[in-house]
Length: 355
Image 1 (cartoon, rainbow, N blue to C red):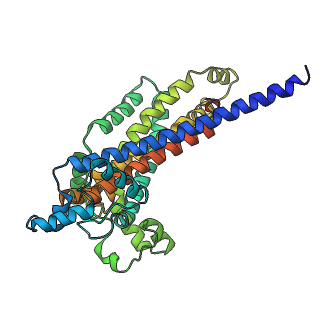
Image 2 (image 1 turned 30 degrees about the horizontal axis):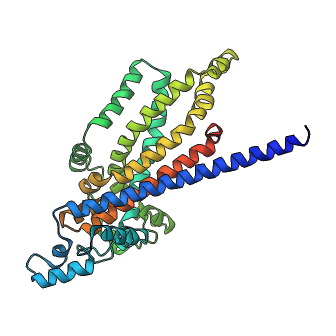
Image 3 (image 1 turned 135 degrees about the horizontal axis):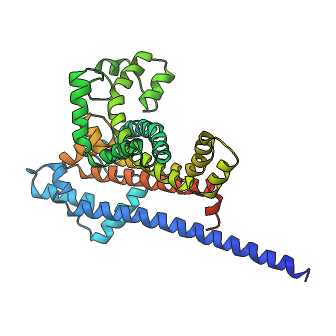
């Protein structure tokens, strides 16, 4: 009997280890399959669109033999499966070809413009979280009241109103009429000759270099597009916060806490919200990923020199290398944030570790 107990424990340990190994292997397989699916979609989009990459490089008036030579250099004369294999190999190594519009390697252009998109999406997510979480909590606590209806209406408008229409309206009001914000763009032209960015994140660089006039100018440029993105993030975060809080407020531990005489403030903010914070972190992470990939229209409206505007300009100039490269980067970032939020959820919630 005594000898069999350690044996059973060893078997259970091996079984748990094998389950974890299988779970990790399945997780990695899912990530790899998702990324390969992203590459497959972008590859076939690049082949389906009626744009010849060779003609985009040499021009419509180039001789036929020049066009054919460029097609051979690009590998467009190879079988489709071989083109896809080369495409995957180049994408995994970060090689997306040369941009026709800028004549630079696409990856260099992406490294230059992507910090602007991250800066805009980060501030937008912070605004959405700061206002969305309290509004969602308030709507859940005041369920069915006028406050709840107002918060739900704010979220409904955020989901329904087209972002380009709201952006143009905001520009008309806050820039053209009131003059509260600066002209569209990332910074005034005068500071481009006196400010030297280091990291690509202008706000961080301005604070690090203690150029407060530049920081104020950057704030006047970013506040409107970031607030616009923050409003759409707020709509999603407040709705999910309300749903999570309604679920937590109906739990037995809330009833027990009220029976013990704890104040409603403590129950709501220190008990219910703490338990709702675990899935809420995942929601905020997904909202951040959504702003990173969905800032194309916002950057176009506000002339924000980020990845969204870069992709838009490239698409208008038939620069498919830049379009596909930017799409892959955005997709890869979205997948990475999803993975990070899933891992963080498992670390913060012990109940998911046994699954």
